[in-house]
Amino acid sequence: MSLESDQVGKTRVAGTQGLARLSTTTPVRHKARWHQGDLSFVIAALVPAALLVAVLVFLPVAYTFGLSFFEQSTLRRNWSFAGFGNFTELMADADFWRAFWNGLVYTFGTTVVSGIVGLAVALLLDREFRGRSVLRALVIFPYIVPTIIVVFIWKFIFSSRGVLNDVMRQLGATGPSASWLGDDSTAMFVVILVSAWAWFPFVAITLLAALQNLPDSIYEAATLDGAGPFARFWCLTLPLLAPAFLIIILIRAIWAFRNFEVIWLMTGGGPVGATEVLPILAYREAFGSFRMGHASAVAVFLMVFVTLLALIYFRVGARLRRAAHGS
Amino acid sequence: MNVLVPPAAPLDAQSTGHRRNPVRKGRLSEIGVYGAATALVVLVGFPFYWMMTTSLKTYREIAIDRTLVPRAISFENYTALFAQTNIIGHAANTLLVSVITTLLTVSIAALAGYAMTRFVTRTGEWIAKLSLFAYMVPSIVLIIPFYLGLQQAGLINTRAGLILSYMSFTLPLGIWMMRASFEAIPKSMEEAAIVDGASRFQAFVFVALPQALPSMASTAIFVFILCWSEYLYPTILVSADHLRTVTVTLETLSGGGQNIKFGLLMAASTVTTLPVLLIFLFLQKYLVKGFAAGGYD
Image 1: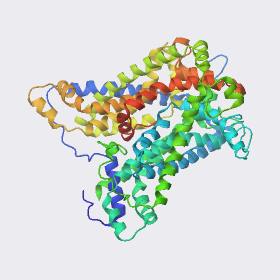
Image 2 (image 1 turned 30 degrees about the vertical axis):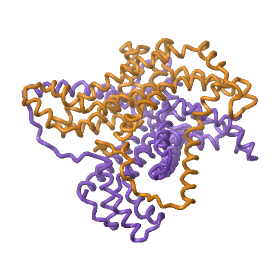
Image 3 (image 1 turned 120 degrees about the horizontal axis):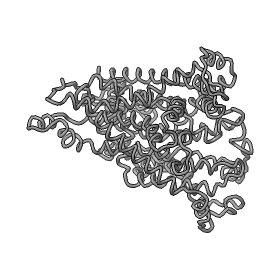
Image 4 (image 1 turned 30 degrees about the horizontal axis):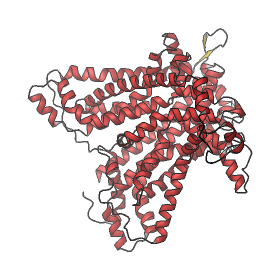
């Protein structure tokens, strides 16, 4: 490691270095040496994968794009070209804008909550205490349990005669409403909390890996220089962790914005659209009203937005990697 | 572009010389740590405790007495569950579909990942990026064409159609994870094997693959869990009872508005959690590794 030089001032470099070790094998590119028969092997190995991904993902995406320019009459089931009709309709649709806004709120909320809780848990698990390895394992569990189960357990806990209201009553408090999910002022809040609960393990475990890759030497140096625990956290841990944290947050944001299951199973988008996001709107249009063209237009909008987020993710990732290797 | 893909994630090697937070510490901070740890245990553990204990309570205890600890263990929810639903059959079907999807995904992805790191590396990087992007495509964008397309192809309501729809997310993830793992495996041994007269395929199977086995296990476990948990595709693409998945069964049990039978639902949830719990208990090592290799949903 080139960073044994204990330079606290070099946090930026050290930070990216830490990410480099979190992130990648150094891509030493050897010129591939081809042997006889290798070409057919490569073709046989790559074609099934490439073909399947193309047919199962990219072709359907193109199809949805195409479909968004058509209209299907519900009764006769024949298609007619609609131009930008579906899109102009969407732009004028208050439901659409509400769903878009809800999606932003939901994405922001879940990302912030799971980010903060994940960071706190990572910091906790980075310390040495008895039972740490058990706890580290336990933390993964909410993330791997099927979403539908997570949703139903919490739906039960939050139900009007559920344990949460019971406990609050015992403590002398009353919930903001009889029914957490039936009230449009609390439904979004609950949906955000439940999603954050399911996703904070991802943040915690990946951040923990990043934390443990930070070189100990700079901490020792900082301690020698008289930095207390808070100074070390604010001036070392946080900046050093920032690159990894940024990437993890971006991933979570993409996954929150495209998420369908949690909200659909929790509230169905209700009450009265209070938690309806774009995937739910598209679903209702497609399989509730069978307006496939209209639903496709919503899906296209969603796709464009997710693509933008993905581009940011790739761009940031590439830049961090370059910084890590360039230093 | 492979952020979050450490070749040998040091996740399970944490115990080695970790001295960041020195042992000399006040009473207070020790209390703080154990307090936070306890809070975390409750936060993570309570919902599952609640699921399991509720499934073992009587209707009266769930709805009226609402006890925190069951007074007596009752199996009435389970008896009702097995009598009213075909959850075992649906679980068996889900298992079948998930296992087939996992096997297909891991073998196709391993081949591709190997070729992408050994030969067309520049193109391989692009395929990897495209795969990750493909994995990010919202399922709601794909479900409309799947529904219309599978109907046309006569694959609606078939296991094949379901498996294909699952592969739309498992394969991109699999390619992404397998490429990362082969990238970390040195090429020199294969080269030596080939110089000694092995074919490329033999070098792949007997030299490279054994070294990739742990990553293949991680990939397989992640893919399996994703399939087992999948909800959107089966609700739309199959309707015949013998093709149902457990998630769909669960959803039907959640109907009923204010009068959801939570005892029944929690019993079904407990049954559905079992395979994941077994993986968690016995294959945790691979799970943690998969996390680091970019397994996320």
